[in-house]
Length: 356
Ligand SMILES: [Zn+2]
Ligand SMILES: [Zn+2]
Image (cartoon, rainbow, N blue to C red):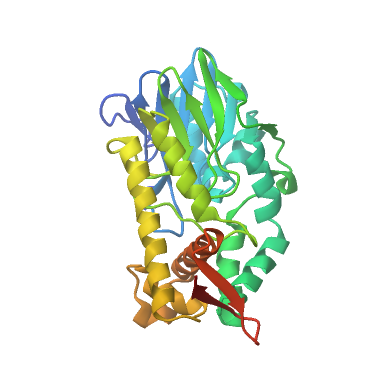
């Protein structure tokens, strides 16, 4: 950080249709003409992702903001400066959050208190109730314990992630919900709410069919493969994500606006490549189970082809260990759901995997 967002050094030009939000290099820049979309790049905390996007769609006097960044006083100032710079009255703003994760909902309170209307898909409201509840933290601990993760580490990993989902009801932020297929209007544009389960159970995208523009949240990224963690008993998030990626590939999206980074090439190709990536990982897990039947989920993690320092597991940051463990378990759930493997409980109550 240099001068920070508290100074007055913002609003400088940074190329065509671009202005700075502070002295730290954060900018608001136009990324699409029709509809008119501006990208507000905000600081991302805790993960290897460099930044998170909030998008501002303008048409006439109406403004739609898609996703609301990670909360901190600098990001709050940056988002508000973007709105001021664009001449947007927060009281005329509708905020739509694609999913409940804190990097997409974090500044909802600031926008709401400034007069914005807050809207989420019904699935997102469901995720807020389920994933932000303390019961979900206990479920995560129990699931990791059953997969062979030690007690202390299971608690550590659950604690590092569970408050990553926010609940507007508990936080007293007023919001409305839209069902899948409902339309959210901004001036001339009509955005359809499309369910995109996988990254979270209830994530919803927005789809504008005339210009073939989609706001995808974290359904697919060009920067990296989006994290898919386990959900509850009998659920198959990897299977849901594969179906979502194939549906998105079939939709004919021309312009994809995502939670992190920008579109870098053909959207359908990227979706199918990401689906193939997950399928390769499941195939690695299946091969490892065939080679050594009866391992626990935790024992299978290193065999799944992650680029990770397993020899220095204890020195690996907890959040990284969480991503590795939770996505590995999701792959095992996928193999169970597709009938490729069976999960057996041993005498100590640990899950062990056998190929069918
Ligand atoms: Zn997310
Ligand atoms: Zn995100």
